[in-house]
Image (tube, rainbow, N blue to C red; front, side, top):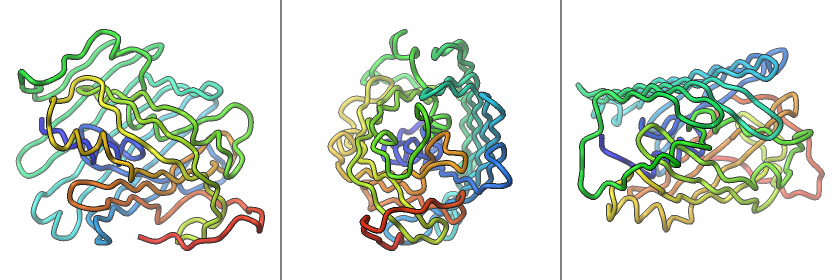
Length: 286
């Protein structure tokens, strides 16, 4: 399975992420946080190349997310790329504990699927179809690489202890320990600033996080794309509180890829949050 680290981050930092290219998702509030539905646009160098939809249900401490994505325009014609992913698990204070993760991606006449069962933060069962090709330069996965992890889809829900406050540095200051079934990598996020935005789908304050990509295992050593992502300082995530203030959700993710800037931005999103007038306003755009 060909690895594309920059696409993984775009999805891992948000939408689905890892092993299936760049999937993004969003959430549009209904009557309460129990049901979320939405849409994101994916652009490359300002040109739309894909769309994604998400449906999430949070019932008490239990969550379930389903995501669908497809490439559009010339990218869609050339590759026929599309994918679907799902994850479920438990939210507990500021932590996410996934129990199931599944993803299937297709491009042309090729498809890849990953099925993973988890418990207590560790992988209990895993099946990848077709199997990952053996390569001498691939960094072997160790037992510890499949423990204390979260899947890329569950990582899109970012709970906090207490109430999620718009622009709070706590939204960003965390490391996402991701495992997509074939590769283990960290995505550290750090707070850079609070910003009031007036976007197409959201008007309010977001916490803007800087992200990095740290490969740990499962990747092929000395691959140029991996080195590019390790040195990539143009990874940014904008986080806004969920309608009930229980967690943060990505509104926008931008990632510098070897072929240009990839932006995943909501075209529908949960209701906004007002912000102090002292926070400068910018127009969110692709």
